[in-house]
Length: 119
Length: 281
Image (cartoon, rainbow over all chains, first blue to last red; front, side, top):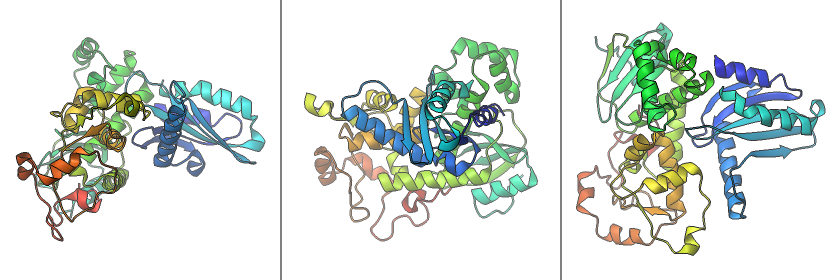
């Protein structure tokens, strides 16, 4: 199906080991590709995004949350807000292998493609 | 045709999945609803308790009324309408899949808010479908998760759906205290003491469950409040409450007398799925 095909394509980016599309409000996972554990758990990711967005807002940030990037020495865990014209916001979550990904390039490429997931 | 003797709705849906059944399961009750199955997968759920896919697409403004009417005229078979909407460029294929799945899960959640009544199998009926359909097992697990989460965050979900929240008048300082998502802001703008969460969901074209989550958050932030049906001794409130709830607890309004009361230690055994956090659907 269309969503699965979109997510499968994201796995072709260097270093990406798992991706999922998650509802930012309900935490429901609409689709996933690759290693599901590395893509992230839907309810957990949505809670994390909400918490960080609230903290940013409380700290005076304006505008919507765009992404959350977590790094360890070997892994990257990222989460991008997917814009929609209507309907509750979505999150594209991905796990990356740091050895196989140029961090800056991978983030740029995933971020650019986040909005294409719904096409 | 009566449904086979499955012990509950999840078991029935699983049996129908194993059979690859295509058709409808009508469930009586409040709200009850109709579950549309294709090859055993849940394609759509129509229930008065939650907006359908069509309602969410139209009420949210994602697809305009005129475009919708034109698409329905060109493709009168509802089963094929989804493909037509995509082909006509009115919505992306993946986005339609997301919206359709969201509506199925929300419908299941709404139906789980009250004990299911009699079940009846019927012939296949045309419906705007989620493609691919949803595995019944996943639907059951997610519904249970939602009931459990709301129970933990607030209390019995079935009670929460009956509240009629009002905005809390605040000083400027308190008003800026919380950061809200667009959805939460929308819910805050919609509450007026008359609308239930279901009314708000239908008006905005959002899922009932999402509206409930936003309401709980707004109540935690002290931005909305409502008169809570009195239920002494069952579940001590742990969430911060706004001061007005004291008055309502001391003198419950007449309206609350009509609602099902839970009794200390007894309650409504097995009849209120919100109490034990399991999806009773």
